[in-house]
Image 1 (spheres, helix red, strand yellow):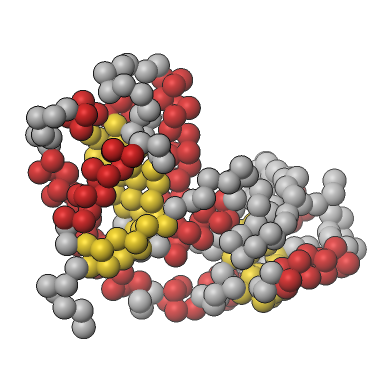
Image 2 (cartoon, rainbow, N blue to C red):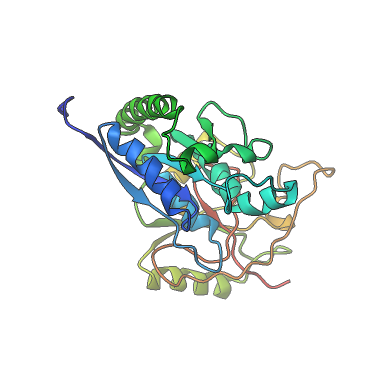
Length: 283
């Protein structure tokens, strides 16, 4: 039983702009004042975006924190195109936060108000207030939002300890959900074996999964046990159970496993709550 008087220690995925030091420190102080010890997890900002890596980082955190300033002077009025360009990575990571269902709080420069979603956990701030020397008139509102966020994280973390999906998932266990055999569009067995060896070299346990004719609870429970999944979303793999009018796409994505941090050049498949990586395949 945790001491209610002790600071709440939890991990958050931090989505922010590295170069906006003053704004970051301002909101870091707000989080610290909420009787919290926050451990930040951040994306390393590699040249190639790995959606699998990002999704796993968000999933393994207790919560999501976004701090979204607009670069430059606080009194300029940027064009819509400039706002979209400056917020493109913010919006990508917010999408992951929404998918994860984790507790979230986002403080954003009010000039982004037409770009970012107006969710209850999103709080605009006036950049001129933060840049001024006369104090911040809305700091008390921001502090109250942080306190509410802290309480939400505490309750969500307690529930997560007993969530069936979390109890089922086994760390570093990877599913391989690929069509194999002589059917049109299937993978040659030797290619799947090469993928399996690639994963094994990175110390992942590989679990072959049969492509189901239809989704059943047993199949979804099997997915819950996996850390992430290597899956093909091409036409031949996703045609089962689909109407002829439903379009399907074929991805040409190179798959490598440079480290245990995840695979590079991957895309998210939104059919399950388990991170998915789409492999490269010849066409």
